[in-house]
Length: 405
Image 1 (cartoon, rainbow, N blue to C red):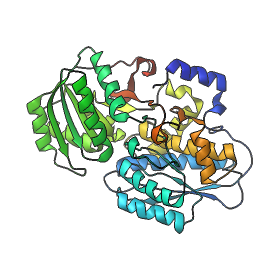
Image 2: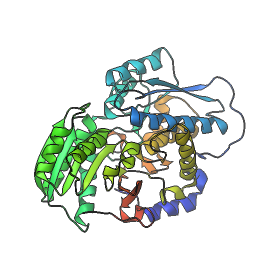
Image 3: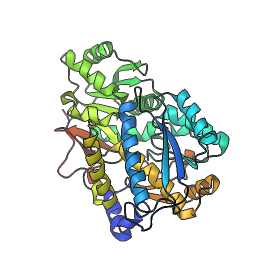
Image 4: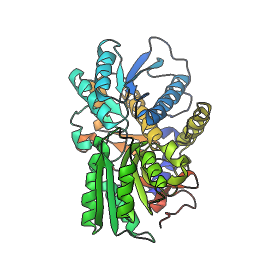
């Protein structure tokens, strides 16, 4: 299920800006006082996932800063207790134990990446804590009733994501007939990429290549060689973080440019800045252009993020999927706490399963399998050094259309 642009804009008009994320960046008056409400979590601040983890860090800093400016939560200041999980699920597991038992945080927010989130989820379950998280990619593994995803990819992304991408390509000026699927074995991207093989088969595409690599691989020359030899007219890259950049660089070195290529979960900044990535496709839930920024909450966040990211010398200063999912996670927590006037994990979790939350990516619900709701995914493309939404057409950036070859 997708959100129609017209319905989204109509809802904005009917509800007003304040309905999106409990009064979003609006001042509510009063200075927070008393003991801080401590929200604990980890992020991949070092290791192979750090390029994306730092986006989540900046987003959380902006959100907490603004939250405290408008009165905190329950009249108390909010403190984010953040630890570095080094991109390692076992480290994340240990640190969430510490956050609950030693740091005694009031609430939890999840880490970045499926493996780390799954580790955090196990710890949260042992202690009965609610866990709101950003980017969990395998919904069928989310068995805990008090975990809530901020990334609106629906309960079956292994089917809905490739269907959306391949349906889009089938309606393009150059419908593909031959597909190559290459993928990291990182759990979430591998899961969706295997689904892409099945969807492609059902749609009658010929699979000319299927290759896998271990997460953390740095030698993409052999993979690039096999891709060039297969010469598909559509390349599906199940990559995470910088893997897509490394593969494109290896292809460039052997003088091969894929005609049409999709990258599942890339590091947005490095990819959009790479000349060889022009035309690259990816999944999105939010980009820093209309109609998303017709939401005034989103528009203000986009400006704040750009300013702070520029000062931090980050490779990409625009808000997109990762920052939007992270922002939405904070919105979910704030909405639940304000609606219930409580920090009780059981009460908050029960409320979230029975209500919706307005976020900058759309309205989220949590009442399907694994507490997932609608798949709000869209497709974006690198065009002239920018990520622009191109599909569905109702969500396309002004004047943007899908480019294929």
